Length: 369
Image (tube, rainbow, N blue to C red):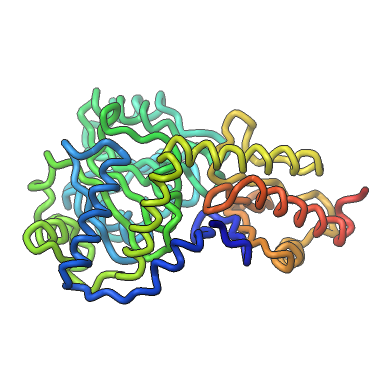
């Protein structure tokens, strides 16, 4: 059952189902056997989504997704390691910044924000610099919505003997990710994204073969995923107070994920939302920042109307008054706004949303007719 009280057309937090909300009404003891069993079930289900049971472990972590990105790099990249970040957007830059702040050697391969990263340039860069030990990739760069070529990047890293860290924050559980077809050392996502849980918990898949090499890499007590994994394996418990209600909501969201048909069905629904959005917005005369072939059913960046009467804050509030929350742009050189296609919504809610957009633009005098 969907909740029409307020629709979040954002990349997270997302609109959640009534069942997911209701799952948070129960209080849990953080060391209680029932809660430990709930955590273990969630972890098994997460591994199932990527077919990772044989070669990977999954380590949950308190906090937003960025907590887990920082934890993954701190844990997986040795202190003398060299991380190459493939940069075509804001979240790539964030990965480079946090790795630099923790004292890791970082190089950045900067490419245009309106195109996927280039596997050819990656291969050339790796062949020219054998000091690079790890590659950092954002699967879906939510600053623009562009999807980067995960399989090709994984293949190049494998062929050239480099380790891969994937930020799959906005793609996991919607876009295909299959450990039987690609290899990475760490892949990161969070509860409040395409699994349609609530925010407050990240999780990192780590390749079992590298686990022992992760010991003592982290500069942080709370962000040490190796220690978190060892402790949870031994006790079944989180090291520090877990986000119990968030875990319970995620457990219920995962039940609904499976009932819907898993990743293929979720991608199909998001694609229907995307097609509805794109068709209606195009008819209004709005254009996308990305080329059509680079758009994704996760989030779409639209160019702001070239009209002096358009003001994003006014536009945002008019759409919000009709029950829909949009997202501002994340670009510095072009005025844009973003509309998410993900969350516990269908094309019915998306059609209502684009009707609200059209109504707001007409009230502002930007859209006529």
